[in-house]
Image 1: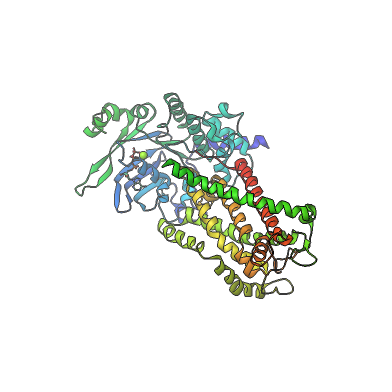
Image 2: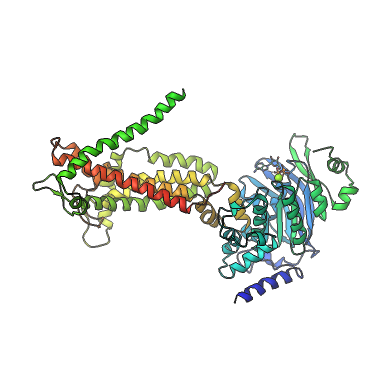
Length: 300
Length: 287
Ligand SMILES: Nc1ncnc2c1ncn2[C@@H]1O[C@H](COP(=O)(O)OP(=O)(O)OP(=O)(O)O)[C@@H](O)[C@H]1O
Ligand SMILES: [Mg+2]
C-alpha cells in the first residue's frame, strides 16, 4: 500500500513534464470556463498577460503589462523598489484578492484560461500556483505538519508520509530534518525555513511556483542552495521569481522582465514593464537605456 | 518618578496580599469549630439556621452549574465573534462593531440580573423541554445572562490574540489553497491558542466570581442538584446574602463567610495555575 502511494506520486511527476496539467480551477466540474482549456496558442506558454492594470484603491500601482511566461523555465522580475514587482507577481495566484481595495483589470490567461473569469475559484487557483514569500513563514507547527498542511487542506488523509518525504527531498531538506520531523518548523535556520516553505509549496503538487525575493533574508550559502534548487526544480515546474539581486537573476533565470516606476503627468508613480527578453540579452545587450542603467547600477 | 510608578505596582500587590491575609484568621477559626472534611464533603448547607449544617457542596454545585451555563454561551459566541472580527469583517465593520460589543461589558450587573429575571426567565419557563417547567428563579436564566455579560471579554481577548498572529502565516496558508475558513481554523486559531485559553480561563473566573446576577435571578436556595432549571445558590451569592444580613461578629455563621471566601480564592487560584500549565504545553509559538 505504501509502495502504491509512492508510485502514484512518481507517475504524477513523470506525466507532468509530458503534457499540460489537467486544469480544474472551478469547484463545479461542468463549467463553461473549462471548455476554454486547450485554446492557448502555444502549449509552452503558462501565463499570457495582456493589458494588466492593478489599482490599490484609487491609486494605480502597475499599468499596461503585456507578457508571456514560458513553461518550465525561470522567469525573473527585476526593477527598483516600489515598481510593482510583488504586485504583479501576486496577480498570478490571485493573492491580490486578499488585499482590501486591490483591483486587477486586464487579462491573465493561465494555459488559455482566464484566471479572473467569473467561474474561477481563487482557492483552486492557489492550489495550482504555489507561492514562496520573502520572509520565511513556516507555520508554528512541526516540520511534518508544515509540509502536510497543503495536502490535508486538499482533503488528503492517506500517504502523507510519502508526500512529506518527497516534498522535503525535492526541496533539498530531507537529509537535514528527517530525524526531527516532529520538531517545530521555527526551530530551523532561516535558510532551512525557506526550504521548508518551498517543500510546503511543492507538497500540493503545483504547476507553477511563484517566489517573491525568496533569498533576501538569507546568507550567501543558503542563497546558493536555493538557487541550485530552483534550477533543479525548473525541470518540472514553471518558476517566476522576483529578485533584487542582479547576479541571481543572471545566474538562474532564463528570461528577465525589467520593470520600473514611471512618473505620470498626474504625479502618480506607476509601475510599467520596460523590457522583457532572454536573460542573456537583457544583461548583455538591453535595448532600452533604462534597463542598461539599472543593470549597470546607475539607477535604482 | 520610577519610585512613584513602583509604588503604584506595589500597592496593588499589597492590597491583594492584604485581602488574602485577612481571609486566613477567621477561616482558621472556623475550622476549629467545623470539621474541614465535613465542610468539604457535606451535602447540607444551612449555616445560619438552627441546627446549622456546614456541608458546602450544594453551593459549590450551584456555582458549577451557573458557570457551565455561562461558559457555554460566552465561549462559543465570544470565540465566534472574535474569529469574525479578526478574520472576516472588513476594517470598517470591525471598527464599528468592536466598541459596540465592548459596550456590553459596561452595563452594570444589576441590570443584567433583572434582565435575566424579567426577560430570560419567562423564555426559559416557556421553552423548557423536559417535564415540569422551572420556577421564575432558576440557575439557567442567571447563567445564560452571565454568559452574555462575559461574552465581550472573551471576544475582545480572543480577538487581540488572533490579531497578533503575523499576517505572513495567513498568506502562507492562502497560498497553499486554503479557504478562509481553513485559514482561520487551522492557522490563526491554533497560533492564537494561548491567548484564547487565557480568555477562557478568565471568563471562568469571572463566572465563578459573579454575584449580582445570581443573587437576583437564581433564587437563594442551596440546592444539591445538577438541574439548571432549579433555583440555586452560588458561593458568591451566599457570601453576599450572609454578609448583608446582621450576623454577630465572631459567630460561626460570620466566619462561614470567610471560609467560603477562602474556598473561592483557592479554587480560582488553582484554575489559573492549571491553565498556565496547559497553555505552556500546547501553545504554538510564533516569532
Ligand atoms: N497592500 C497595498 N496597499 C496599497 N498600496 C500598495 C500595497 N502594496 C503595494 N502597494 C503600492 O504599490 C506599489 C508597488 O508595490 P510593490 O510592493 O508591488 O513593489 P515592489 O516592486 O515589489 O517593491 P519591492 O522591491 O520594494 O518589494 C508601491 O507604490 C506600493 O506603495
Ligand atoms: Mg516586493
